[in-house]
Length: 171
Image: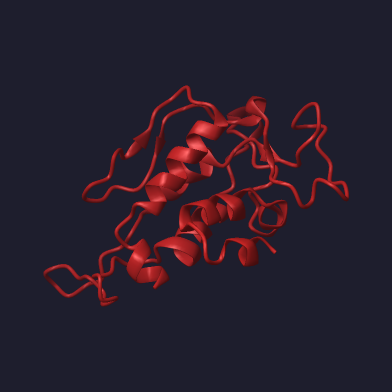
């Protein structure tokens, strides 16, 4: 339903709607993603961070506007991102789970909240700086520390949306 509603609209809005849908959150492990806790060996799950870029937005390798693969001097394809970028985005996607609960720990699926956007619970959001995509014309390559979950999400999705690979990859 989310894809049907946003298929002919703004791609940036579609990225956000898909990102915050609980079904996608369950499917690609973003729902319930916790901030890091070294004592409890908790690290943010990287699955959604990786798949959003790889499958839904920019792909694995840089493309020219005509869709051909960009290469280095030795003919090797140029990657669009690396592991540090995946980790940065994984930290962005912390603190989001089912909407309507008094706290992150109390959030549970209900008939109603499985079809409304996930809610941010700041107590489980990583507020540190986060590395994001670096490309010509990027407004930033790091999301600053101290932002809200919503600010981090907006900055992250804007960073992906403005990547020069979006147009040839999606087209």
